[in-house]
Every structure is written in C-alpha cells, then in structure tokens.
Length: 230
Image (tube, rainbow, N blue to C red; front, side, top):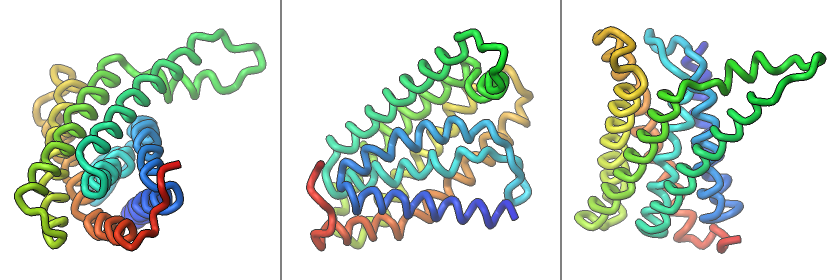
C-alpha cells in the first residue's frame, strides 16, 4: 500500500509543478521551490517502509524541486534557475527561524498543540545545518551541470540526457552531504551507509521518472501556453 501511495504522491508532485507553471508561468515555479523545501523538511520526520527499505517521506517533494530548476534552466536560462535556488535557501532559513520562535512562547493552560509542534519543529541544529548545506550545494550543482550539458548537446532530443545527468549527480551530492553532516559520528558506519543508499535510490527513481514532465513543460512553453510573469 505504501508503494502505491508513494507513486501517487510522486505523480501529484509533478502535476502540481506543471499546474503552477501553466497558471502562473515562471513565477509559479519560483513559488513551488519554497513549498517543496519546507514541506520536505517536515515530511522527512516520518519514516515509512518502501520497497523493503526504511525511508523518509521527504524524498519525493524534495527531489521534485530538481525538476523545477531544470525547467527553469531549459526555458529561461541559468540565472533564473540560480535565483530559484536562492529563494529556496532563504525560505528554509526563514521557516526554520519562525518555527523555532513559535516554540519559545509559553503555551496557555488550554493549549493542546505545543507538544506536537515541539516534535515537528524542535529540530536539532545539526539536522537543520545538514539540510541547508545539502540543499545549497546540490541545487547549485544541478543548475551548473544542466547548463553545462545543454551547451554540449543543445538539441531538444537531448533534454532527457541533461535532465538526468545533472539531477542524478546532484542527488548523490545531496544524499552524501546530508547523511554525513546529520549522522556521522552518531550512528554506526553500516547504518550510515544504509541511510545514504536508501535515500539516494529513491531520489534516483524520482529523477528518472520526472523526464516526461520536463518535456511536457518545454512543449507548453514553445506552444505559447505559459503566461507572462505576474
């Protein structure tokens, strides 16, 4: 059942990205980046069994953000994609600060949410740092790599190549950086490797499956179905 829900949520993520793009143009893609970053950092707290491995839910939403930067790189260039990464990075910082600030307030006697909020947003500084560094490095690499491959193979028939070549390496960087910063020295080496491997495999699958959707986004743009910036 989890596997079916995983694929359904993956499809929903891709379709929401295209819906935002279709309705709001490039602005819609900029909107999706902070949505993905913030939602992923909340969903990452939930562990589920998927395909026989222990994984976090945040992988789907977070990995889908690479589709957004690839669409921006393909249709609008490197500068727009890098700007989206910066928006996502600042959104992570702002959301974490505001979530933490909410925990500092003394709850009233009638409050029922403090314990749940503490569980959700009482992130260890090390986890927050791991998320920020991994997001920044992997996303900036993705923007650079996509445009590097685009210069070498600019034809539309190679979109699948530059999309996957950039994203799959970027996902590797993200998984390595996050796992090492968050858990090195805290968990045994074999457990650390299992977390890294399961995380990367799922992100790799997301990267492979998003290929038809970048072609869809490019086709919509070329046919003039994307509105101007709002």
